[in-house]
Amino acid sequence: MSSPPVFGKVIMSQLQDNFGRRFHYLRMSVTDVCNFKCGYCLPDGYHPNGKPSFLTLSEIEQLVGAFAEVGTQKIRVTGGEPTLRKDFTDIIRLIADNDQVNTIATTTNGYRLEEHAQEWYDAGLRRINVSVDSLDPRMFYQITGENKFDKVMRGIDAALEAGFERVKINAVLLKDLNDKDLPRFLHWIKSTPIDLRFIELMETGLGRDYFQAHHLAGESIKQRLIAEGWQLDQSDVDDGPAKNFSHPDYQGRIGLIMPYAQNFCATCNRLRVSATGKLHLCLFTEQGVDLRDLLQAETQRAELVERLHAQLRLKKETHFLHQGFTGVTQHLASIGG
Ligand SMILES: Nc1nc2c(ncn2[C@@H]2O[C@H](COP(=O)(O)OP(=O)(O)OP(=O)(O)O)[C@@H](O)[C@H]2O)c(=O)[nH]1
Ligand SMILES: C[S@@+](CC[C@H](N)C(=O)[O-])C[C@H]1O[C@@H](n2cnc3c(N)ncnc32)[C@H](O)[C@@H]1O
Ligand code: SF4
Ligand code: SF4
Image (cartoon, rainbow, N blue to C red; front, side):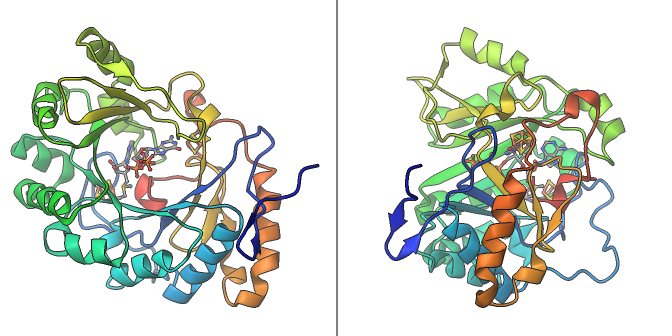
């Protein structure tokens, strides 16, 4: 058996599952709270379930430390709307202080971006994904329940100016809502260095009717792009499940997330922890596994690392969305997508 790689003084024990997939990417949710009402996620807005108790800064520090020890190199801070946390900048700074983690990213609805892009960059944030489901302000309002299109777009400009190494735009593909928007999106990225992400709508526990009304297969977009000269980029062994396309006439790139496509999960490289400290082995896992009891002191680190390894051995090969099984995930705001 080969010995584990040594980085500085820390002996790394890379998280790996029974299917040979390695997990160096953590999606860490820091809140379930959100101020938007996206029809596919929280159509009635956020309603607290009792008094929420999200991970504290000190618990987050323990979590980041443990995941760094098992080979995590990239952390995405998500939610709910992660930037609604008053200590969001402190969270970024805390992750940046960990030498093993070399990529800090967040996914946001862009509501606070205009005012804070530079502050977050200065704290160590380097990649930002902003959800923009339509470039038509009225459609944006219809989908998100918030008339904030202009503000979000100003936020994206601020992020580009602040110097983020990657600015990505997420748009969920929605039949009869934004399905006519492709030309506008293409026009935008012709001269703007933005990575567009089209995400196929996924069914969630509370989103069954919306899914049936609006699901649109990403394959139709894929065929259109190929017909218009877009080429599939070579994927790296450590890339996640998105398929990326580029075109010589465009500065931006396009990624497709098609969870219903064959072999989507073969390149799964990510784990999730909820805002209350539960490990989710899959976005659509049957249940989260509590880690919080082991986030109280650094002396618990070895036990926490052991629990992570033990859990990884239980990770399933794929999701069961095709059978309509959405697991414990009632909506993606509860785990951060
Ligand atoms: N089913 C599934 N969907 C995913 C997965 N990763 C991302 N998605 C979907 O894509 C959405 C956008 O993801 P982002 O938060 O922008 O991050 P990302 O796609 O992981 O971006 P990168 O870090 O650049 O790979 C998520 O909220 C999910 O809806 C995954 O592993 N499985
Ligand atoms: C849950 S949100 C959390 C971060 C932030 N509030 C935002 O909207 O960017 C993360 C991503 O999940 C996507 N998402 C939410 N529900 C989804 C669903 N049912 N199917 C596909 N993507 C979904 C959103 O579009 C967003 O890009
Ligand atoms: S997708 Fe993001 S912004 Fe929209 S409701 Fe869900 S958590 Fe909020
Ligand atoms: S659906 Fe689950 S197993 Fe598949 S790529 Fe996403 S997180 Fe990984």
